[in-house]
Length: 428
Ligand code: AMP
Image (tube, rainbow, N blue to C red; front, side):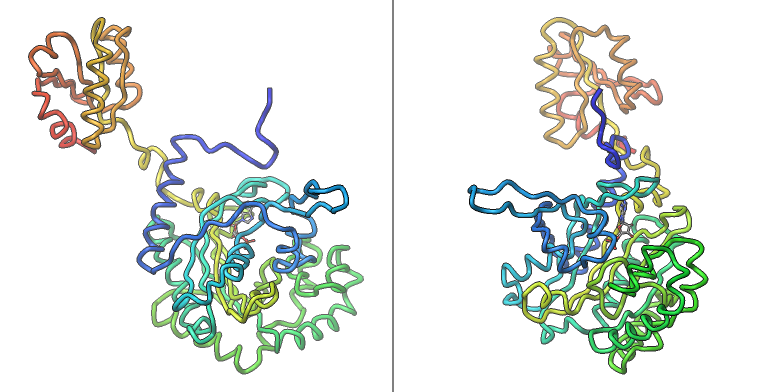
């Protein structure tokens, strides 16, 4: 038997109803904050991720699904392609490729789709997972650097969490500085690491050399007390980064958005600058981050574009769905009516009636004339239909139908023209 690939999974009904519920809520929230959808390819040039997410990050160095594509001619080399591990890089690539800075105002874009990382699968961690994300990006003159944008994005996330009924979250906030102050911090961090790194794990020893900030990604328990004593970015922020971060916090306070400062929060991707954040949720166990994001003011230039400060986030939809109290049963829709054709030649009549009702937005499950009435009624009950509608020769002649309420057992006769209204009046 062929099975789904390790780290991937099938999403089946009724759980898919929860996914649709989440996506519909997100689309609704994006609409009122004036965000518009972007869809970028799942396959990108591997270089895109090396230059944005960073070669030294776990995501790029260990977890990429990448391959050399077949060359078009023998003399050529194949191009290295990758399944996207995240979507910000693709969005910024598209922003540059389509000169989106020529459009008026800020580009406020959202996406919903699968991402791929070759991680060790566990509950809440998959190799194909889904993200709902958004980016605000644009020229500085359009206000893209403003702390008001950071606060608006964070407040929008709180609105979305409220709408889907997720409570008990915690917003963790940090500033990771910018190209001006981060090098000084890097130097201090490297200096501090020099004395202690020999006692740390081999990954940290490598990171200390190549990208010291990544030391904070370390999960090895023995390393934690050492990491705890390392210098903090918050002590190295320059004046402009400090003011920016303060302004974000001030607006959040006035919006009554609660947050906690976490100076160890550096996020697993290299492109972040200034504001970095994560929402965690207690009910999720080890994989407790439901979403993360931050600013990436230099990313466009890194990828060969014009200066275009931006901020974005990605919600882990798999974890979001897990955190939702709503049960799949509650959001999954059930048929309004089961049509039971009774006797030879009635499939035809039943199909016509089903078509009429569906045109009035009634959810119809169509039975089969080979079933006896008893079997039809049993099937209707099993699949959770509210009504059974009997279509026999007498009913067609009279143009009136027996409509049985399956919850109460009550049966009434309804003229054809009144069926849709009657059925809909009893919707849950
Ligand atoms: P990142 O793109 O690493 O900032 O992750 C953003 C969010 O995506 C995280 O907070 C998680 O909720 C989710 N996420 C990241 N990696 C995985 C994974 N392998 N499986 C499920 N969700 C993930």
